[in-house]
Every structure is written in C-alpha cells, then in structure tokens.
Image 1 (cartoon, rainbow, N blue to C red):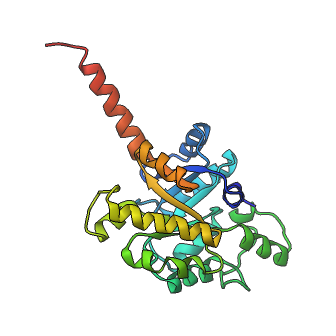
Image 2: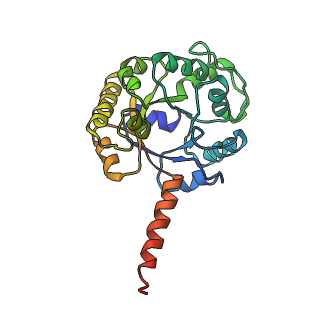
Length: 257
C-alpha cells in the first residue's frame, strides 16, 4: 500500500506541498528532503502537460515520495492518465454530490469496484509482469481518492459523499469555499470555521481523512489540533516568493540612504 494511504488510515499526520509552476522533476526530491510526506501536482490551476506530469511522477518513484494529481474535472481521461502514469492517487475539485464521487470511483477503480480501463506493464506497476487479477485487486486497494469540498452544497452533502465506497478523504478548498459562502479570503470567518468543523466531524465518523490547504502556520496548527491529518502546507510559488521577498526586504533595509 502507498505510504500516504497507509499512514492516513493509521490516523497519523501527513504534510504535503502543492506544485503548479516548477517543472523540473527534481523538485519532488527537494521537497521530500525537506520532510514533506507527499506532493500534489496541480493540474486544475496549473498547466502541466501529460508528458511533464509523467516525468514528475517518475522522479517521485525514485525519491520514494507519493504523488497525487489534482485533476481539472471528472472525466475518464483526466482520471485515468495520471493513475496510469503512476500517481498514488487523485485530488478532485468541486465535488458537490455523492453522484460525482461515485463517477470518480467508477473511472479510478478497476472492475468490480469501477470500470477503469486496463493497461498492464505501464508506469503504474513499474512495467512488471503481473497477474492481472492480483494486480487489479492491489491497485484498487492502494489508489487514494480525495474529493474537495468547496461550496455550501458540498458541506450540506458531506455525509452522502463520505459514504461513497472508494472515497478516502474530503479536502477543504478554503479559498473557493470562502468565495462561495460570500466572504472571499476570510479563512477564519465563523461560518467557514463551522463548515470545516462539520467536514472534520463527518470524516472522523465515517473513517475518512479530512484535509485542507493553508499558507498560515497558526491556521494549520489549529486544524491539526482539531483532527485534520491530510494537511497541505504551502506551494512551490508561496515557498519561493515568500522566502525571496523576506530576504530581499531585510537586506535592502541594511543600507540607509
């Protein structure tokens, strides 16, 4: 079983980073050496080609760090190609209903759990000669599927979404949720905090992991203390831009004109 899914099933904390701009596959080695437990490649807002995505996933295999891919939408091709390239799983935005979650599972899992097309001896099994029946069963067990709750509709339907077999985590998209709730960017708005609390409670009840993406350490610590274990802290953009701005600003202050 991929380390990420196994760790989350044990109730342990995992911390990931999301990349959407850096294209050198070695970025996954760099982030893994910093202690990140997993990397998400953002192909919702990012613009990675299938080939670049495949190269990043291959590098992640060499660095022994799980890669998830955030796909732009639920379609057969967008679901299947990252998994065939060897991704440990998917993060799927804007999942508002149980029917959408079931469609994701249909495309992502092999029969009998779903209807994923079968192509063996590909990157997803490191080109090994395998028993089809054994491998399909193993792949279904290992594939990690996280759906994003980003609207009041998703919050309302959280219990039905969490009850769909094959869904492993519900992940809050805090910016989109704040916009859809009418308080853009206010991650600590009482209504938003209440909504996220509901996701955490439902996931705990259903045996799923709950997660969120944040750029503020105090907010991240708050939700970890509340029970979130699928935490994404920062991105390639934020880490580079924030560190550069802090350093350059501090150095320029050393010279008094």
